[in-house]
Length: 235
Image (cartoon, rainbow, N blue to C red; front, side, top):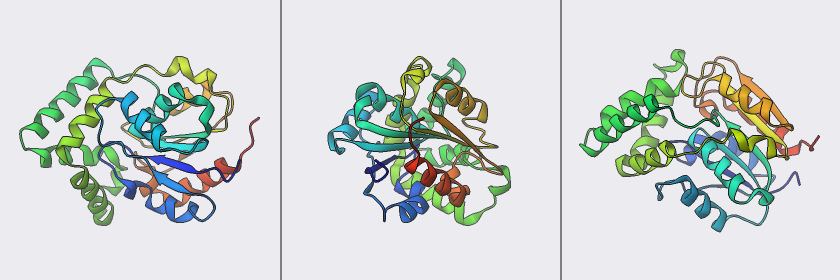
């Protein structure tokens, strides 16, 4: 149903502020909630917590780590999800190099050097032209501070252990939005195209002049894409 409740799942170090523009635009037509992805250190546990609190049937949208969680929800309870949005994310597991990079960030966080983690992540999150955007940076750093180093470690552990979701994609038979910033350095457009090509009922949206945090960088474009997805019928 087009008015099904919508659950949003934020990315690493992010809070509901990641979706603030979309919540404001979409909440009038349906219940909109934001999943808690801060308490568990594995994707199965995060997904189980989400499902325990979710309505019986719901639309699901996740960005980055939120997309990994959304794909885990699809493994655990595919019949409960009426439509799926995968924003700035991918279906592949971490490479050994990526896991090594994450371990380095975990060590910094555990050593009380979370400010260095923030400095490392900020340029990976946004389009290069937005690096000097003070308001955007303040929002991103506030989300990082609100989640904090202990949650950061749990989230990284969950991300590092994620499975290869590519074999699961062809079994998804609901309306799917795959959206990515054209200059997303963290989960580049080729990962979005790979997912969209594997899912029969997927629509691909590439947002120009946009990095990884598309919901904040280009909120109007993302909201329009979500609005179209929320009323799309299965092919």
